[in-house]
Amino acid sequence: MINYIWFGIIFIGVIFGLLTGKGEFMSKGIMDSAQGATNFIISLVGIMCFWCGVMKVAEKSGLTSNLAKLVKPVLKILFKESSQNEEAMGAIVMNLTANMLGLSNAATPFGIKAMEELSKSNTKKGHASNDMALFLVMNAACIQLLPSTVISIRAAAGSNNPASIIVPAILSTTIACLVGVICCKILQRYF
Image (cartoon, rainbow, N blue to C red):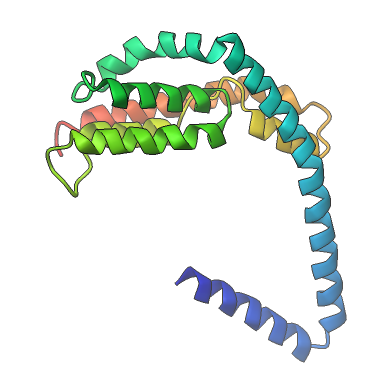
């Protein structure tokens, strides 16, 4: 459905541009936008490679596993239904740890694995369990200790201080995560 909507928007825009005699400006705008996007992506690739390297060093040095050890006891309290499922808890811990370090690409396989494991222990097939809903909220509103992707995008866009986002990101994501967990815990009593 969304493809039809996008096609309709583009088609109407092109027809309107041609009918009003703005075809030349439209072509120039398309070319300028494509060139700007290409330049942005090329500059972003280098910065993303740097941050992925930093995160790989953090992983090899044991920083991610140490962070996982700190987080695991708290998660066992939050995920009461699945706290005995070591496969699910391991995947949840690794997903949230990778997200905390801004490695959303690395977190995705762990998130999929966590949902598969949580689904296995779910008694109501076809409905999300309380732990599944909580994990989804925590994954979406995960605390960002090092928002490397945002830092990379800010650097590629020419920011004077791309890392200035770290403290506001930690505060805002912590508040979002806490509010999400509190809402899940309150709502699971009623649903």
